[in-house]
Image: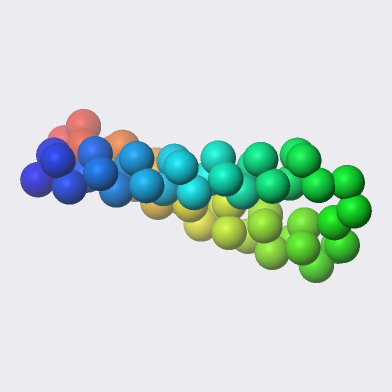
Length: 57
């Protein structure tokens, strides 16, 4: 089970970094793009936190 959690953590961390890089390297984002990226990032961070808690138990 730990391997699946580790794999999921790796994936969600990668996707989170991808979104952060997109936001940080873009100089002409619209308000909608910023909000959508923030929402996606929020969901990913929640999943990462939940997986880290599951891994501890």
